[in-house]
Amino acid sequence: MAAAVTAHAEGATLAVRVQPKAKKNAVLGERAGALRVSVTAPPEDGRANDAVLALLRDHFKLQRSQLVLLSGQTNRNKVILVRGVTPQQLADLIPALDEGD
Image (cartoon, rainbow, N blue to C red):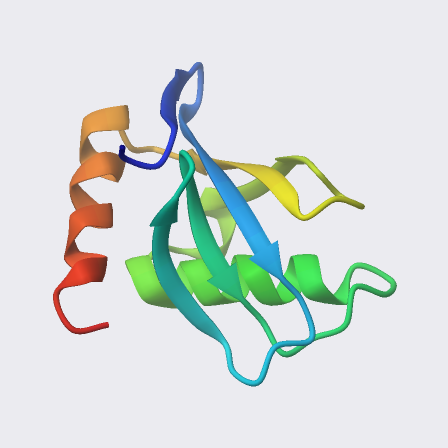
């Protein structure tokens, strides 16, 4: 099962499951319909959320303005909007995760 990617008026959304206070920042692959991500930042004052957006921005080579946290500000399960891409373009980025990342 692939990570949940859906269409949005501004681009596409991605379901993400976050592990805060991890040993390293990493995109871990897909599980249960969400992209698994670990960040070293603690879940305090939005620091883990900022770290997740920065990690995904670097990993997918996106600009800061393209990523927005839509839901899950205080939850491990998050929905992130990626502006300016189609659901297919976003889904095409995700399989590359299994190839040595």
